[in-house]
Amino acid sequence: MNILIIDDDPNVRKTLGKILKIKGFEIEEAGTGAEATASCRAKFFNLALIDMRLPDTSGLEVLEAVRALNEDTIAIMMTGYASLDSSIEAMNKGAYSYITKPANMDEVLVVIEKGLEKQRLSLEYKRLLKELTAANEKLKELDKRKSAFVANVSHEFKNPLATIKNALSIIINGLAGDTSPKQKEFLSSAKNNIERLIRLVTDLLDISKIEAGKMEMRMENFDIVILLNEVLVDYERELAKKEISLKKDIQEDIGAIWADRDKISEVVINLLNNAVKYTPAGGEVGIKLIGEENELYFEISDTGPGIPEEYKDKIFDKFERITSEKTEGTGLGLPIAKDIVELHKGRIWVESESGKGSRFIFVLPKDFRGKNTSR
Ligand code: ADP
Image (cartoon, rainbow, N blue to C red):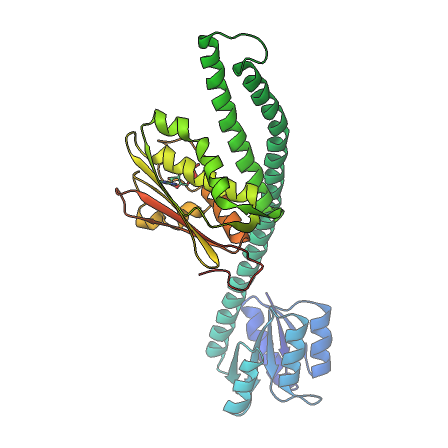
């Protein structure tokens, strides 16, 4: 540990220096502000004892110069007169403490030790912060690379899966020759699984686009009621299989809305998938669609397990699942739905009482280019 004693009185420098050397410090001396600045420029001092009154400049200016050269140097002011004002000013300018002359050596040593302890902690803190920042940067980079990898793999999966699905449809529909009912059954099951894989890959691609801020919107005018009825047709078989009844409350005359048709259909599909997936056999799924003056109100309800209060916001976060071990899924459906709704300047939320089913609701502006966008 090295200390620079800055004082124009050679006797003070000598006495202080002698005792501090005995205590194991390396000592350098400076008799003027200019000498002090030159020494601090040449090397780092752990601590500087600075006399308030110097021949060529004031102690406060030396303090500023020392701190400007290295803010980690601990500065302790020495004042020959008990001037509170200048001591406070020195503290404001970054001095660690001050002592009055003639110095009581015990007191000086305590202040020096405390100052050096503070320096040790502050240097340690800076080192850790640097390490943490570097580790964080590395993690971010790895995360980015991993997302890009997931996006690439998903992309590579998508086309072959679509080809397999088409081939299966052709065979199932008898366009490639006769198939026995048993064969059809196996092929239909294979097709269902391929469709699930396609949905999964689409979710993975969507989430990587969202993360990269590259989710593109293809806006157009379309009739939301026609879209909804198209989507519902695909669920008839599954609803029947689980003996779930569908309660529809759809306002038919809403007319055209301005939105991305495929993406809104994805939101509806994700919510319907969940409603059907989480509702036990014999339950009920409800769909409500109301057109208000500027907005659409969309509600998908079910008689499933409901969402506990503490999960109502969390389930819209990536990979968040409440009962992950019981049902298949990725935890990506709701965050994607939320992102799409928000890209349309709408809002999505869930209303639910645990054990009494859930109501997922989203509100969309009919045309978000207008002023009145969200309730
Ligand atoms: P996934 O269904 O693939 O797990 P989601 O993002 O669609 O992912 O949903 C996140 C979680 O929210 C689900 O794992 C489930 O715990 C809960 N959840 C979503 N919809 C419902 C629902 N209709 N009823 C009960 N829980 C639900």
